[in-house]
Amino acid sequence: MAKQRISYVDPVAISDPAMLEELDRCRREGTPRPESSAIRAHVPACFWSFANSWRDIFKNGVCEHSIKELCRVYVSRSINCEYCGNQRSLKAAKTGLEEAHYDDLLNFEKSNRYDERQKAALAYAEAITWHLETDDAFWQRLHQHFSEPELVELGCFVALTMGQQSWLRLLNIEHHQVLAGTSDGMAPGFETSEALDRSKASADYWAKQKGRL
Picture 1 (cartoon, rainbow, N blue to C red):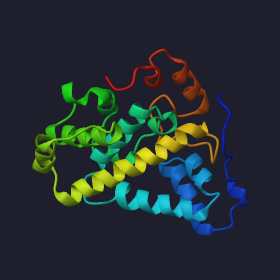
Picture 2 (cartoon, rainbow, N blue to C red):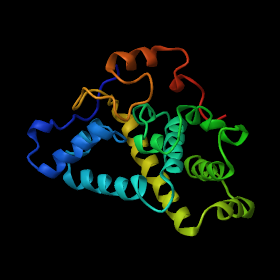
Picture 3 (cartoon, rainbow, N blue to C red):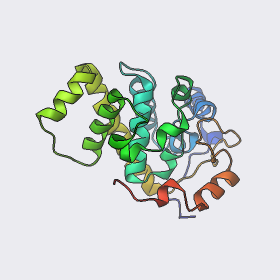
């Protein structure tokens, strides 16, 4: 395993009950899982800035959560953030998002897994992630499917998750290392450390595939 670059804050060393409750929520619900939160816990302001923004913009907000979840994993697949890409939103699953919806994210325009609203959102995430030039037709497409408040929220969310994932990718953190023992919020095949190792060793593992096609 690659060397971890920033240590976790041991929950035992945390005295703030609100921070401990947030870490436990991460353990119970995932997305994010506790490891990334335990990194941010080195600086409480960073911990809460992310936790509050994630709650308000990703978990809640004006645009449906399942679309934001697709955009989140689109970013993971694009920049190869394995830690984030191997998580799944329980809330999105409860609204009908299935594992198959994650399979074609990098080829979303050609896929029949997504409706036109989902494809427009993913095109927005693509343009932000890959620094693409946009034209009037691009923005007409977005405005056809989303209100301006929804576009603001989607843009802010993609920027938030892309920045965090770009950073976490460098740290070489892994699942099942902080408050281990639960599989909530993990992708199928990653529920335990042993299952995670098997999945990552597979030739079909998504992070071994090419990026944007």
